[in-house]
Length: 142
Image (cartoon, rainbow, N blue to C red; front, side):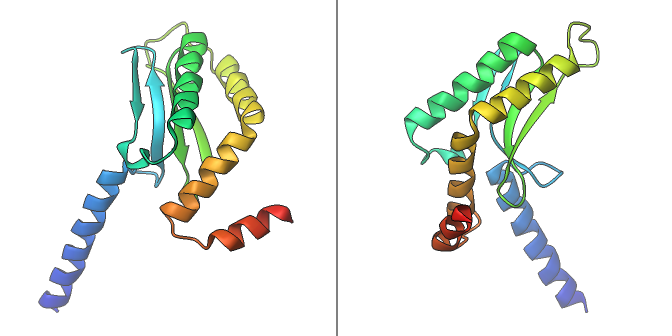
């Protein structure tokens, strides 16, 4: 029984190390990129450097413009199933943060960039989750 526990613990440690490399969050999401208005910083997860530069630049512009307009912290993340999740947060002391405006802006970004987010989600599902691309593409046509 001790040997079995050691194997499970070893596997768990390897899984946790792999998750850290991907930028896995406690809720199972993986950060693609984000911007922080408080620190005036932008982050792009180096795991996704194979995404074309033009798309990475478009993501940077989306994140930075969001934080310039709404403030707070804005991240674009992958759900466990590969779907895109837009997260907005603020510091507790930030009295200028308007969650309603941030939510509306987030919704507008999702609508206007639907094709971009679909393509990035497809990339994630094929390259990270190793799903069958032909099945994914035939599923989009339905």
